[in-house]
Length: 548
Figure 1 (cartoon, rainbow, N blue to C red):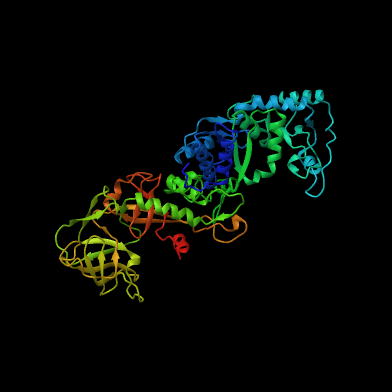
Figure 2: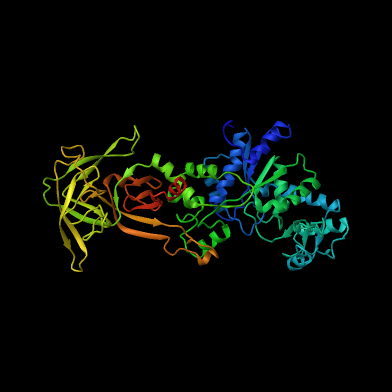
């Protein structure tokens, strides 16, 4: 690690363990359950787990916690691996919790033989009732004192499919009066007659997360099991499983604050509800905070990694302003996104004194870049500007086009509005202008001062495109997410135009549309129908607020 870089508390723990000789080779893991697509919160965990291993010359496994066959799907597995690699990380190994089902089963038998686990016939509701409350101790199950022999027989019968779902469970025998509810004889195995995506019908009993997770870590010799704060109260059970199953060396669990982001849904359950109820088009809808959605919208892995670095690793939960993520994105896109001109709501401009078939003007592809070069743009008698860049009766400080006023066309000429052509309903159909032929950028009167500069496209060569403008899924405020859904989170502009150079855009290509924002060619985009997503607008309110 760089000596100048401030260390987070996880790094301090790792360095202490290395210096003390407790750990020789750092091994971490990223262990998602494949029951949905990863979101921006998972990106923080990915960066922390993989980044920690990279910083100390260790390795990080991608391990699917696939111990609940009812909720898991191969689609999610494929998406997770794609997202991890897109973020720039290569797993040391791709593993599955289901790889260890036999090992976990043997560990459960070991606990039964030690008198530390028993088969319980109570229903889920009864177990919950017997557990007690935060202020009252629980009470023993009537099946708690079964003999080890009977428990072994019953557990083997559970495995052999003799009992139906919910009829029996295997529980740890710990302490029903523990102040930590997680230690009050937690369930270790339940019966589920459901096919598994990898093991098929081999098993009809499946381990609970709190039993499987520490054993998976131990089997892989994970040195630092890094998870979010909601698992802090589960750590005593993690340690109990590791100790009583005789795991050596024993992994250690450490917790960090999960990412909470303003105006952003950070729950797979709620995100799945949006997909299932078709409020969004799918898990990769560009409004979704899923990594797939962010990628489709046009986010870059570099910006997301930068964001995760800036927010740091804390021990207490807090909410991060989504503006910081957008700020990181603008900073990176500003360096890499070629410039193009696009008109989202076109208004025709006819330059009455322009003669000839047209000409070429030059425009920068990427300012401040020595290698991006220039591009040719066609200019002719008819062009299009933004409808919002013209007003018949403008207010003070409106420095765009109006009757009798001049503006500069970016990289082209100064024009003046002479007349307004209207439709039968009174709306503006076109503008008639004149231009100064000596005012071309670099020309004789190029330095003549005008207060407004407009972007434009050439009417003869501009290419039609569809623009999709995205906003946050949630409105500002507090309360239930369903009451805060932003019904205006998507606006489609079907009649936009982009300069000819935009016609070659391929899905995933990113651009800055001058004066508009950063845009990305959508996965739906084709040469026959170009579609661009708004990635983020140009105004950086977060940077301004933090620099004032």
